[in-house]
Amino acid sequence: MTEDRPLAPLHNRVYGETVYWITFVSCLICFVGPMFSMIWPDNNAMNPYFTYAMVFEGITGSEIWIALYGDWPWFHSVWWNNFFTGDGFTMFGVALGTTVAIWALIPTVFVFARNKQPQYVIFSLIVIFMVIFAASGIVRVG
Image 1 (cartoon, rainbow, N blue to C red):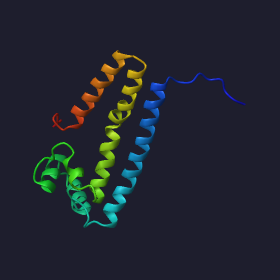
Image 2 (tube, helix red, strand yellow; image 1 turned 90 degrees about the vertical axis):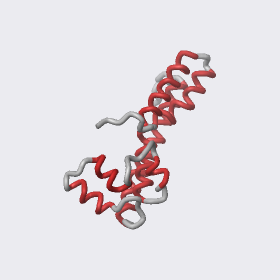
Image 3 (cartoon, rainbow, N blue to C red; image 1 turned 45 degrees about the vertical axis):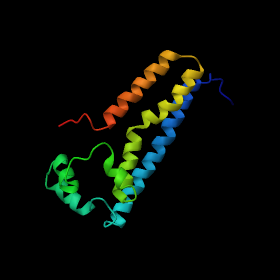
């Protein structure tokens, strides 16, 4: 028995499918990365046992970052510089997942442009800029 549901607009399908698959890949990366960290603790930007000890001692997140890297990391420099380590790979998965709106809106903008919907193109570009600005680390809480 088939359902006679209307087909969603192309821009909805493009955005939804992109979010779905990028989030799926991001989850897999975030699942596998910590395993690499625990299996090979010496192949990490930060030793997970040292990091967990600081967390359980009650040290703040900012103090942990400074203890591990000497300074607050700028933008996505930690995973970028340590991509082939367990924790760097995991941080990449988190960064990919948290910026999924950017990656999904890029093809959606082209669909809006092809459908001659400039107001949605402009709105989508504004949202892309806002997510990039938020993910850049320029604005910090705390």
